[in-house]
Image (cartoon, rainbow, N blue to C red; front, side, top):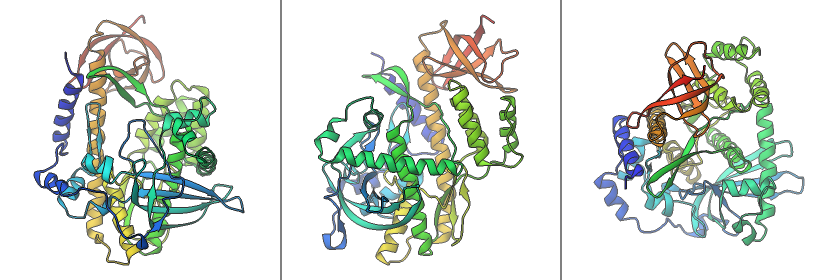
Length: 487
């Protein structure tokens, strides 16, 4: 029987090598890994023992590289203390080790339709440095007090020992929070966890509302995940946003800001994650004008958010395609070195200043760098990175993130072509997602794939509905070609 997984894995490996990403660990890294037999431990007197709190993780159904746990505590004044525990990866992956060298080169785990290429070996990222259920683990804890209006009143960081009492999944928790399904089994099995999660959800909603009042953008793009039956690709499933994903997202944004606040308060140079005010604002205005909406002449996150919310309500079917257009015109996020003590450049999409990446050190190298800076400050030892090294690493991490995204996008296209290669001649309902001098593209509704319309494009524009016939696919290159029919 043909193995679609094997085919996609081979394409993924070639794509990684082409982008100068390492699909395999070196002999030195493997040898180093063999010497690590257990999770890191330290004398309890050097840590806060918080294992008794109702910590839980919420992640994808199949995730085992668990970077964060969360817990909440209601205060007498109705504010809420939110604690975010972040896996202490540095406790086992030391700076300048062979394992660190691999992580430094790739800078991120690469998630493709063929395989997942972890930044760190799975013995670490899914076990010994993962905040797995039922395990005591070292962590960096971000402690935040959040008022009823969503304002973070205060924050601090410290080291602690934590214990994951329940490994939960986004979809199950979201359906329960929305009243669409009973509580997941692990929620009912841990006394008090149901009330704990509802409190966290309330606080996350406050944080989200405040960010959107400040101009955070409501965007919704389509990124289908492959579904396999054994080794055979059977379908593509679009992952939807939900309450549980937003809960974790909002807490992580707040934790990342709190981490910047801590480092800045200590006068420590560190990374920032920024998204600059869009240089192509006029093109964004043109997109709005085609939809009979007017945006101001200067980049304005509040105005753009109002436009997006309105369009999502008016035409939810095409909103993901509009979102993708806006995302491309805003541009990419990047890492920069910030040595200032005052306000730094902001993240346009999140409408926040002083933002970094710190909450996923098993999956992203910038988060591991930030963790080392925090730990050195907490211990009162020398900063492990000099400013010139951080400046180089910021540029390097930005570059490799782009490379990883290109590999992931390539494999999404290859998986789409693979799914459709036996359906040449079939016809589909579709919507135009791109129309320019470079060509016309359309997204098929079922399955959710995109391809180029190579004939019959006259008069087509973004948002137009049409009927297309599949005429060819190229799995290796991720090409799908349609022709328009019934025009």
